[in-house]
Length: 420
Image 1 (spheres, rainbow, N blue to C red):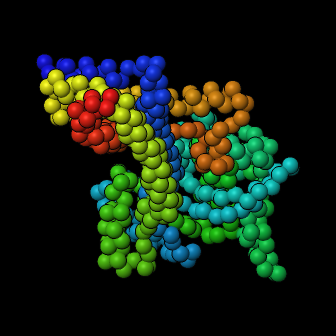
Image 2: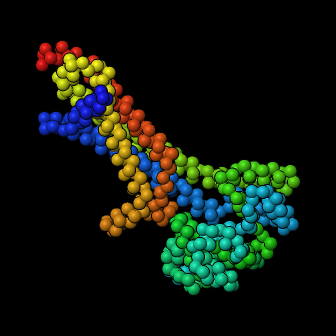
Image 3: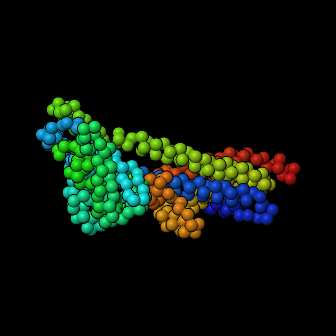
C-alpha cells in the first residue's frame, strides 16, 4: 500500500502545473533527449549492420572466399593437381578458374578503363549475385561468339544497350616485329547486369574464359587465379589455413591461398572503426539527456522542499522520499527509452520506404551509389544490441536520479518549515 502512495506522489510531481512550467519544460527536453538518443543509435547501428552485411553478401557472391594467384607459365597438370587438392577439403564447395585484367572499353561516345573478368559459362550460375541479375536469355546470348556482360552503370557511361557493340582494347596481345601491340576487338553486349554495387556495376565486364585469353594474347591453357568457395564463408580463415598446409606439404609451386578476410581486411576494418566511433558519438546524446534529468530533478527538489518537509513530518521516511524521486526520474528514463526504442525499430524496418519518400519530396538522391558503394539503403536490426542499448539507457537514467533523490531525502523539515 505504501508503494502505491509513493507512486501516486511521484506521478503528481511529474504532472505539470502552470507555476512549475520551466521545470516541466526541462523534464520534457530530458525525455525527448533520451527518446532521440535511443532512436538515433538504433537507426544508425541498424543501417551500418545492414551496410556491412549487404557489402559482404555481394562481395562474397562475386568473389571467391579464398583466392590463389597462379604463375603465367604454370603447367596445366599442376593446376589439375592443385584443383584436386582444393576439392579434397570437406568444406570446399567448388574451385573456379578465373582471369582478371584491366582493359579499355570504348563506344562511339565514351571510353573508360574497366576490369575484365573471364569465366566459364557454367561457372556464372555458381555466382548467384551475378546470375540472378541477368535476364533469362542472358547466358544463352553470352554463349555465342564475341559476347560480353556489362554493368548497368557502365552501359549508361558508354551509352550502349543489349545488342550494341563495345570495343575492348588490351594493352598487350599482338606480337609484331616492333614488339607487343595493343589488341583491339569488338564485342556484342549479351546482357546488362545490376548487382547493386557501384564498383562492379560501373567498371566490370564479364567474358567467356577462352575469349578472354584470345583478347589478352595468352596461351589457351592460361588461368590467372583459382577462386575457392566454401560451404560457410565465416570459416574461410580456418579452411584456407588448412588448404595452405596441404599445399606446403605437397611442395606445390610455392603457392598460397588468401582468404577474403585478408583480401578485404582494410575495408571491413574501416567499417568496424567507423561503426564504433558513431556509437560513441551518438551515446553522448543519451548522456546529455541524463544530465538534463539531473538538473530538472534538482530544480524539482528545490521547488518541492515544503512538500517534502510536510511528508517527512507526517511520518514518511528518508528512504521513501528517495524512492519517490528515483521513480520520478526513472519514469522519464523508462518512457523515453521505450518511445525511442519503438521509433528506432519502426524507422529501421521501413528505412528504404522513408528514403524513397524523402527523395521524392526533395527531388534529389540521398544515397548516391557512387559515394556509398550500394544503390539502396540497407538495414539489419541486431536485437542483442537493442537490448544492451535499452539496459544502458535505463541504467544511465537511474544513476541520474540518485544525487537529486539523496538531496531530497536529506532535507531538514524543521528548518524548511521554520523559514517557509
